[in-house]
Length: 426
Ligand code: XIL
Image: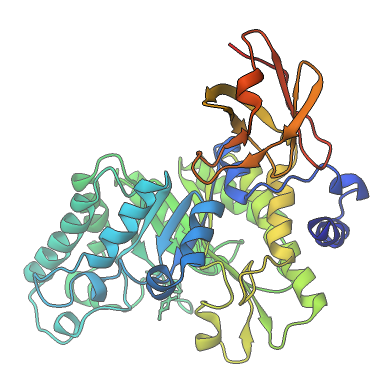
């Protein structure tokens, strides 16, 4: 009932009817996202990824897409000229493959986190182009077919002027470094989705106009760009406004996707219940927006637990910006995402198959809860349990395997009262 209590609070906040509690499942975010064909994800910090079991467990349970917080950046992947390090990037990509998740590659071209050999070197324009090409082709080529989308160019617009930022790449190559970057990426993986990514460009503003002009220019020159990433580093109080739809729509009209790529909602520390509710509203709005905007493909957060977030180190006195607290407990923001993702879905358990395994009956499907009851031809059998040896979508009824016959009707009822379909044993 604890879940129900939390959800009760949450449902008040996001303005849903009180009845929401009885229909709530225990299913993770990704199960609902998978059903909708939507992508919800997190950035990954290598330290807990390697060191804390619960970190990986949460990633694979809750998310169907991820991105590296730092591991794919230039300084990490090419620490010395022509010397690449793929230890972390390989581990991340392997993890997504093993868990049927998608990967975003972040980022190929940026003004930050460049190695000293690059920024301190003196290169001719041709040499700089060769370095850019080698870096992009090496990364995109290595992960061809395994990285779904790349942030090809990150943060190229200057905040105050709206012109191209005075970066290493602009100084070394000139403004067409952007065109080249997209072309090199496309040549190395024709199927990867190629993004321009930036912050403070979600609404209608001078900066988002500058980005719009940049990407519409790229499109009209025939450059291979597929989308724009909205980083979405926000503060409590943020709500989706009509201007977000207007901005998304003008990008859609250019034939471009958007993705929310680095969402967090920072609070003033120490946080308060009121701030946590504000934060929940922001996350709920963002996912609702992305699900209803036809060109929005994914919502990725810049981490998931407040234990690991860049915010306290960058914005003094701010933090608690993510959807799990420092003890990996879901916050109101988590339940706001969950509520929106589950709206309109049928949350009852579902049997898709059943088979004997000795005396046991193995039932496959989804949304089975531990302690659910099994009925055969209307007669209640023993309780069923999630079996560690069985796939996660299966449950086991002990001894029921002895009794089952072809043509028998199976039904599972979860402890919360939701009943499955009636399944005829083959
Ligand atoms: C940040 C990481 O979170 C930090 O760990 C790192 O020290 C600096 O970069 N916009 C981006 C991200 O595109 O790459 C940044 O990530 C956060 C802002």
